[in-house]
Length: 442
Image (cartoon, rainbow, N blue to C red; front, top):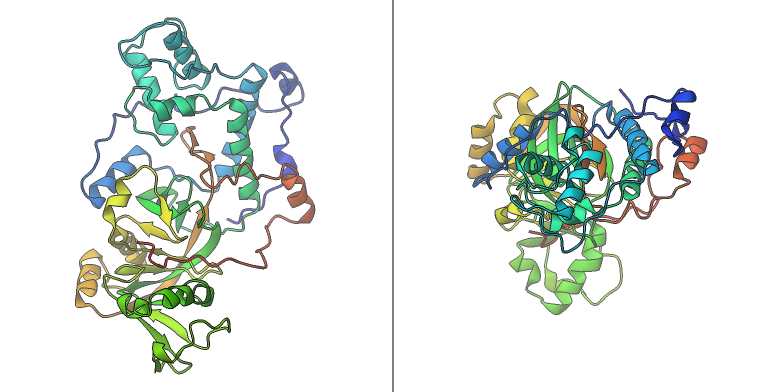
């Protein structure tokens, strides 16, 4: 099913509930957040990629992006607009002491906030005690915002609680606009990276079968949003450095350190793949190079031991890394634009389930161990989307939010919806596409 969405369908007036009902709008309800979702226990830090991924998957099998995502966000916009009309939720003092066992007016405000955001049932509104019910409500709020489900209100949870409902509405509006600008064909099996949430999902028959933490682009090297198709899995890949990176980075590094290429196991290749001596190049020149730079396969390679090939104008991929400790961080915005995947070999095994035959996880491990570059072409391409959704709604009604790390929501053009409606549904590809680099990114 191809996304093609009308802009006018999401125009939402912040009017009283009675007026909305009179004009035939859907009944306005409180945000369909986590009320229907049982409380989840706090997850202990996992010690391996496999156990971490299994713990993440256990949270929900609902994908962040499917055919119904757009409609669910529209309904959440109605609900949050109704909250705004009613005055929003209360702000909590910056010095509030909010932990299990405490009580007082700040705790009472917290209870009211969580009732309004539908993290706590209405009958729990009264009172000022931080009891077990409030602990579970705080955990639900934390899970919806990508925070550790501790049940106590620390600095990050307090910051998320004090985001005004108007800002949450802007996040949902931005997500709707981005979905309207996408051209994506859903298939029986597809892959989605949600950049603000820093995870990747492998989806089959409408359910998430694999979910892994990822490391995406730094603030000054943001990962792009895109739609593409996975065409191959490369074992022990080489890396051909894009021309722009050669001009802007390799030349500068060689001027400072003539041994840089050899240290990085990089070779210069001519038009017929013949080796060129670095000493024969004038690295102070501003002329466009007539050679390519290729990094040999190995532990030093910027793509690690495995690359998921998905040709796109940005020259970005999903790939391996040897810096495993970064996956344990909550803040995982540390690449040069590509997506590094926790337990990428397991994701590759999922991708290769439909062929070619003989490439299960043990075979992938053995192929990597052999040390030779091997390109495994897929008989059927798998659609992949990198999306930037800071607000979305899963099928069970949970409204999820993540930080706008790249400040894309702040730059949202409020006339964008009308422009899309007037000029077509698919956002045009930028004429000057910036290539991302994973040079020394690990």
